[in-house]
Length: 307
View (tube, rainbow, N blue to C red):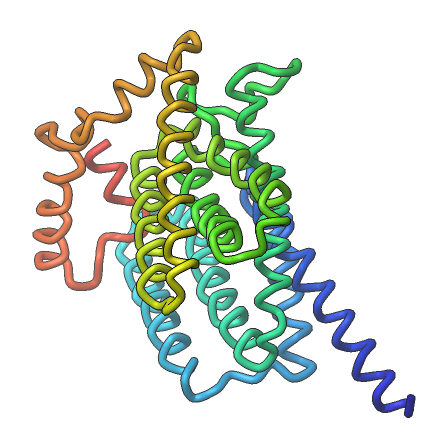
């Protein structure tokens, strides 16, 4: 092979490995700044120096996210004490740039999608196992992977841990429904682990997201296929999956403490939703404050006022 082709392959291999490592780290955010954030911040800078291309299609995303963060900086001028606001804004700006980064690299190298999803699944399985082990106190110190008696994995909050697992879970479900029958056992194991992680997070948002995603995915696969055999396969697998899920939930609910937590979390409305200063009331309060303070009150200040 000519040297130019060898160099191109080497660069592609290094860039793929760099992206894969970043995705693997994304499932471990116990403290901020997390290793993922430090690693990706460095990777974005290096990539920008050596040819990060932002297409015209991605430019609106960059402009909108930067404008939102400039708004946060303007709001910061209304604060008497900055406290942890600079770190909060730094993380927000990093998340904006990382969104633009992933949009840019996948638009120029679509082949990275498969690598990203594989790394995401590995990361999700690892953090799910930690969350499940923490929930059942599988080893000394495992409780660090729980919060509020709910699985949190290697995250600070179950309500972040649960939604993190939805996309890789949906991806595995897609491969299970559309892939060859011979790969089903290989895909079923990580899917079961991730589904268990979502369940034991007791995050209503994650439950809802995963359920809706699964229904939409199954419906799309059914409707876009012209093959009667494939449609029959989707129907049969869906019925089997729902039956297995019901049986699994009934078995899990027999475990000590699980039934009480499930009953509590399965309620549509929680006390912190509908209380006098609950979540829904705070939406109205926040909207009124935005009208009264067009420059904002500062990041994180709302919670110091209303608890």
